[in-house]
Image 1: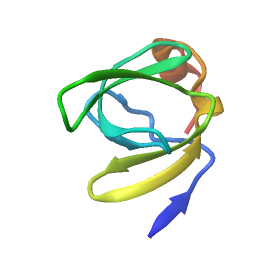
Image 2: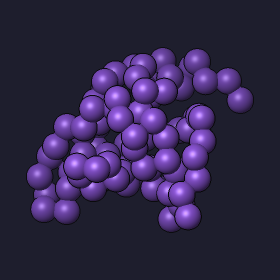
Image 3: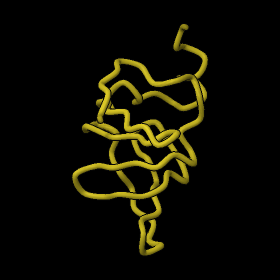
Image 4: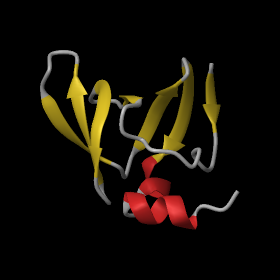
Length: 82
């Protein structure tokens, strides 16, 4: 089951599994506009955040639009209010 949410947990994205229409893999780095992912073949790929993304955390799929992530990672953690 895929849950749609507006905000993601106030946590690090690095280390989470990700699915997009073009790639599946593990997030190894994050910038303001991209996620760097290592796929099942061990290849590094860059994924633009401005698309629908499925994050997998604790065997639960979380479907979000990457646009809400388009902020510097360190700033995102400061600005999201809980």
